[in-house]
Image (cartoon, rainbow, N blue to C red; front, side):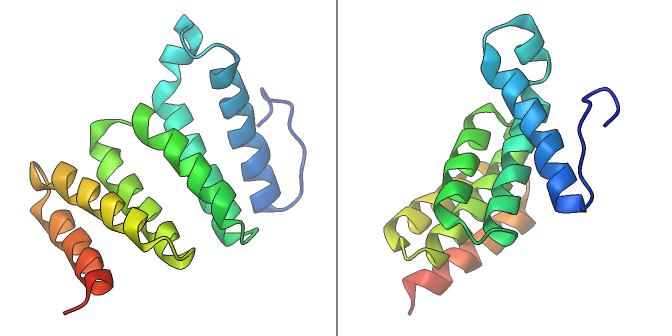
Length: 131
């Protein structure tokens, strides 16, 4: 926080400022050496900002856009979880077809290394597909 010279009182405001700072640094020149060195952190920043947009501000559309930015730059081991969260957001915003696609992506990624998560994502998918 000190190095970023950010202010704020409550945790959500502080988090938004700090993750926004990382996002701005990454977006300034995504191909630069500096941006490449913080790419993983930038993915987490997008995901955290998505979470805050969704849960703190009830802004599903912004949350979806931020998560869509996190996924392609995230490490493979986080992409399944991010796709699952994206699917959850699509469900709540009434975008069933997109939710199905997101859950299928999560399942596809997790199947190779995390059977338990793949099963959890399959249950989410089944819940919107119905009997």
